Length: 410
Image 1: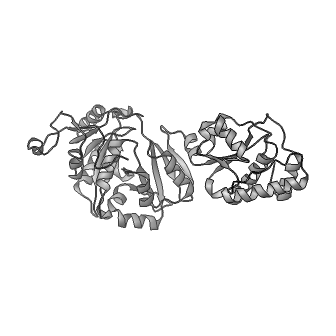
Image 2 (image 1 turned 180 degrees about the vertical axis):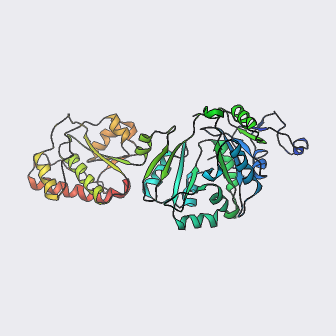
Image 3 (image 1 turned 90 degrees about the vertical axis):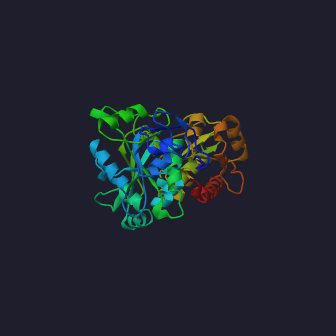
């Protein structure tokens, strides 16, 4: 996020000059362009004026609200949205400065939700976060302006908070600058609603289109924060973060449902030599472990650095798994390690130091996520050709290491 003391580059346009513009206060004259400074954009928003806000998705109508009681800007925003054919009661979206602020403010704690925020934000994603009574009461007490404007009412929950973290330096800077305060109850909340063009003909993706639409509706926005043409040109993808810990798609957008699903899950890859003994047993044991202690959706795979395709798991390995009460039904035969498997994996466990070295040599993208399975750094020796008791001992060692590693991927 851009530092409030070192603002990013951009343009502030003073659309409707005021007396302050002529007295050297630093505001840009009508039609002129200044490099982005804390003034006049921040001053106009803090003074309770509406603004056109640039983000990476679309241009929006923005305002800053703060304090325990509604200010005039909230009525101005409601009136403007009504002229645009929208209802403020549906909520406006809090444009938060960063992910940690969202997590702390809304009390987000579910593992899948935290994973989604960590992987997809900042970015073109809007969240509708289910709040229980305690969460809504805490939000109302600590951040009353946020609770007033950015929480919509829905049956079954106390409220639904609307938030996103824009991947746009100007919006991030403005949000951080107004939010920073020693008194959280008076923190400024940057809120916005995307500007839809007349006749449902798309969305404003640049300042000119946004200003024209507002003028057409009879709305005066004194300031425009212009960061150039919006990269996406459509509203952010919207998902609901459900109280039970899952999520559902509410509005399609730049991020596909498939990408969101992948971001909310973890893919674990076990690697040995031929993918017929050690790594298939590890795959089955890990899948069984996940089933016993589900937290986030987890995909478990295995492969071999010298594997062919379709070779069956050895009978000894299957018998060992059966004795452990672990199903081998999902093991589909040997698979060689590929760039695609490496790229899709979130964490990769190699059976030996030799396997790890081979992975890192062949696949640079494995760096940072490939490691030995045994946390103590001991190789898991190949049981191929050994007795059933050797397989049993190998599987027991695998199970112990997987239990120790479990928290790393959950």
